Image 1: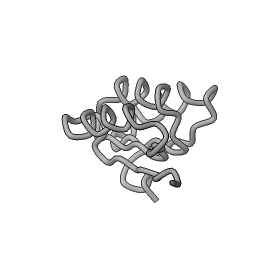
Image 2: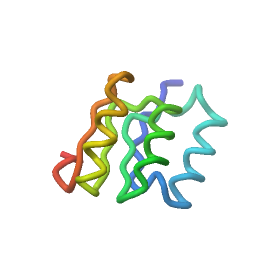
Image 3: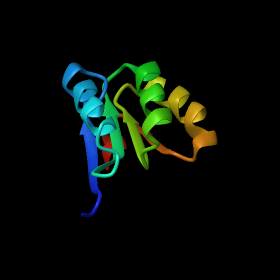
Image 4: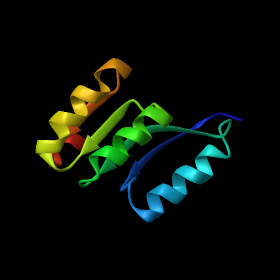
Amino acid sequence: MSLKRIAILGSTGSIGINTLNVIEKHPKTFKVVALAARRKAELLYQQAKAYKPELVCLFEKERALWLEKKLKPYKIKSGGGRSGLD
């Protein structure tokens, strides 16, 4: 069985959080490769540290710069605004 690569848009909302809870219970089945959120920068940062995705995007550009600096030591790519998901 191969790992299913998952991108979660709205990872800081209730559906996103519940999806991450399911993924956490099945680490041999799923791998989070991207997380995106509108404005909850601190929660998105915590999720990124926990799941180590390849990419994180925060729609709110001002906070996206803060997030980018915080994620630098983890070597996680980050983007901001609508273009951050490209």
